[in-house]
Image (cartoon, rainbow, N blue to C red; front, top):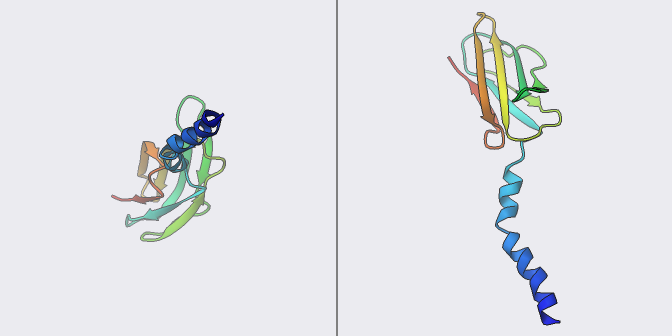
Length: 110
């Protein structure tokens, strides 16, 4: 009888180190984007990676140089995302495999 009481408690204690790791492996509901370039950021899209890419976040309006904006993520799943930013000088910034579970803000530079 005593074993029936101890075993569930022991299992719960064994899982405690895993709980913080699981909490950190979720992407945020929004992410801060900073335009550190000298030209406006005209558009920005964040999509899931893989063959069936899905748009999860989009910049609402152009972002002036040196400014920041919050981009809401719509139903984020997993940690790895693709980012595509287009600037007014017709240059692009694309990053595949950004870990949004670790990165809560992104700074776009030259």
